[in-house]
Image (tube, helix red, strand yellow):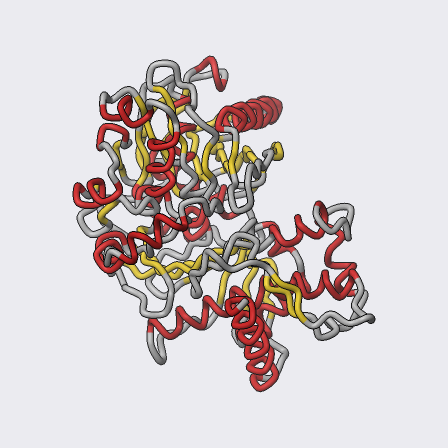
Length: 495
């Protein structure tokens, strides 16, 4: 039996998953990742912990593959995007903890660049906004704050990468320093139209080009994982950032198709084909996973705190013992009791782009309980995603908005949340049989890269529906709910 191994390195955990050629999940291993918060607004990961945990997960799944008599044809990598790693090319050791995509320490630098009038040109080249979410200002911070780093970078002694590049480097024992177009397009350093690093942007952010990885399409052989790591020399033949991988895994390969991933954050992407469609409503333009030579694009709205709000209920508020308990707690009350929760723990992303925003729980009374807070927290995930979809529909124009939304990620298993999402959007929400579409997308890209599939269309044929959530709420009520959400957001932004 031929199988594909996906390495799914996320914000809260590292996982390895084994799929057969038809996309059925055969085995999985997972390790949680420690989050470091050295100061308010700062979020870091230990890059060596990422590597060790990801390797151990891969080895556990490969052991399970052996018991199944499975042959692993190829390895795919998908990763938390924008998270920035800087390491020594000779020793392979990181110079500092990785700066996570949620990290806001460079907000002031982004505001300075905006004040200098740089944002329009940056957006023209990259499709992105000037925000600490993306990698460039994080990398510049590391070069300036780690003693001697900038001089060493200019001498070619250091390497930068998003997490995919870091894992690829370690798996190949330093033989390959590369990334794919989907990850490169999240750095603020990549010209998405030319498909190459921009000398203009490198100069703007003061980044030596010698740091940067080679950029390749998302499917194709990147290198060979060393036998000492995985027990055999296996080809690494697919790489994509987690959200682009999920778009591919959802078989949303044609213009107008979209998916929303409910992970630590929520990320709604609409495929726009060969057109780099610009946004006037707070979204970004990004490169989609590229299975061949032709560039592919997507519109994206990023919600910084999605499923992370459930982690907060568990670890911060201690309202639940495990994430799986949140639906039962939320369903123990008929509604949120007038509460509105704006979970701006790391600022607000699309369509607001306010890194200075902070979270708020509005409408508290003596009758408010943990159950009401849990329900408001779940509803906040759907409200934020609905705001992104409204912006997306405004960008694409009348008659071209979404007619359905495919969903995935851990929180998509929550029926209460998915029904509320369909109610707010007024369109069906479709949950596939395999909600691990981020990992599945990486596996399918690897299969394409090794010739296991003849074309992307063959991959798309394997998508299967598990449940369809139809909207039940009237459009008037949904509109009133969204108006209440936007009022709450305005109160937060005015604070």
